[in-house]
Amino acid sequence: MIPSREVARAINYHREEALVVSTSAALREWHQVSERRDLDVDLTDCMDRAPAVGLGLSLAQPGRRILVLDCDATLRTDLAGLATIGEVAPENLVHFVLEDADHTSTDGTPIPGLNRIDFEGMARSAGYAHACRFDKLEELLIGMEEIMRRPGPVLVAVKVIPEAEQSPFPGRSMASGWAEVRSSLAEQSHGTA
Image (cartoon, rainbow, N blue to C red; front, side):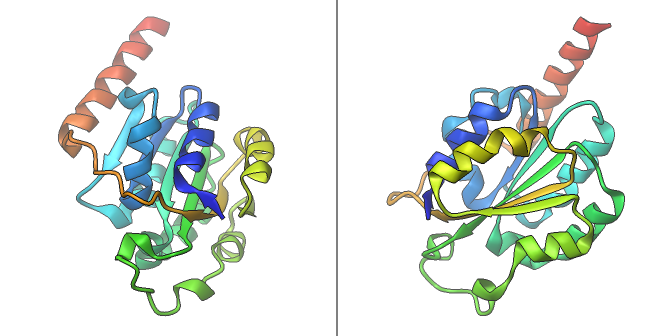
């Protein structure tokens, strides 16, 4: 199992100019390490919609890598999102699912059946181009470069141990975060035009 903050750091190191959609416990860790908050979409009010938002962004920004930082508890509430992503098959989407080994995100209460869900197998069955699983930091660090190069959609399931002291959610609202991302994308498109 990998400390969740280390997973966030590994993703941040490899993100380059990717847009990052994060939610739930993944968002708590992500906003602590992200070096490009102007390209981060924080989902605090619709936590189970990270795959759908990531899919929409991947279609709207086909030349940019889109990373979705999801959690097992939130993904299980909308497993149909896997099928939709698999059907649309956006090559620029990488979907990380942080599997909470000790159920910290639900105050230690296990969600019945959650430990039996094989997100990697489900993603393959749904049509994801590639799916993999990590539970050792060294393997994740070695695999990240290939993950970020592969045409998607790619699902990366990671068994994590959340930090002992849970980080707070970011202070910015979803609306102000979206405004910051839109502004950053507009500046970048004007700079390249």
